[in-house]
Length: 368
Ligand SMILES: *Cc1c(COP(=O)(O)O)cnc(C)c1O
Image (cartoon, rainbow, N blue to C red; front, side, top):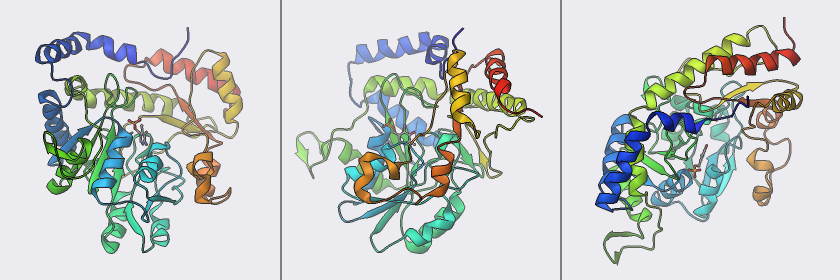
C-alpha cells in the first residue's frame, strides 16, 4: 500500500456532513465573497489566536503582502527575513516593491537567528518577518526586544503555525501582524485558497480591510487604489467548521511526532527539536540525515511519499538572483537543505503507517 505525504481525504471524510451544511447555507444565502460566514470566521479566529482583530483574505501570500502594504512599506524599503522558507515570504516583500534582506537561521530551531538580526538592520529597514517554520514559533522574546529597541515592526509569517505556542501565547499574537495561510494542506486548511492577518491594531486592521477590497469601504467609493484579495464566503464557513477541530488535529500531529521521535532514538537520524519555550504543531515532521538522498530514494521505491522543505534556500533561487547573494552567505540554511527530509505527517496518520515508514528508514540508516 502506498503511503501518502498528507491525507486530506481522510480528514474531510470525518466532517463531510458539516461541510455539506456549509455549502447549503452559502447557496441559500448566496453571498459568495466576504459576507456573514467570513465575518464570523474572522471573529472566531481572532479569539483563537488571542488578538482583537482578524482580516480574512484569499491567500497567505496576500496576508503578508497586505500587512506590509498597510504598514506603508514599499519601494526603497528593506524587510528582514530568512532564506529557509517558502518563497511566498519573500514574494510578499517584493510584491510591495521592497527588498528582502536575509539573515541565517538557528541550527537547532531552524527559525530566524536573533543574534544576527541587529547587524542586518539599516536605515531602510521597515519590518522584520520571522517565519514559524514547520509549526514551531521563532524565538520571539529576543526578536521583539530588538524590534522595540529600533522601532521596527515584526510581521509574523505564521502560515505553518496555526495553534503553535511560544511561552503559552499563540503564533500570530506577537507581532504587529500575524499572517496565516489556509491552503488545503496547512494545519488549518480551506477547501481552496485562503489566508488571514491577525492584529491588535484596529487602524492597521482597517487599512488591511481597505487594501483587500479595492481601497473601498463603501461601494464604488475608493480611498486609494487597492487590490482584490477577499476571502470567499464558502471558505469562511468551511474554516469555521474546521477551526473547532484544529487543537484535536494538532494533538494528533504531536502524537505522531512523538511516535517518530521514539522510533529514531537509537539511529543516526536526527529528530526535529521542540524548543523549551514552545508548543510545536508539526505542520511538517522534518528529520536530518547525512545520506538524505539515498534514504529518500528508498522511501520512494517502497511507495512512501516524502518531501523537501525546502531544497533551495531563497538567496540561491533564480528568482532572487538580482539581490546579489552568493553561495556561502548563509551557511546554516545551506547545510540543512542537504540534510532535511520531511516524513508523512497528517492528523489521523496511523501507528502502523508510522511504523512502516520507520522500519523502511531503519533498514538503511545506522542503528546502534
Ligand atoms: C504556505 C506558506 C505561505 C503562503 O501561503 P499561500 O496561502 O500558499 O499563499 C507563506 N509562507 C509560508 C512559510 C508558507 O508555508
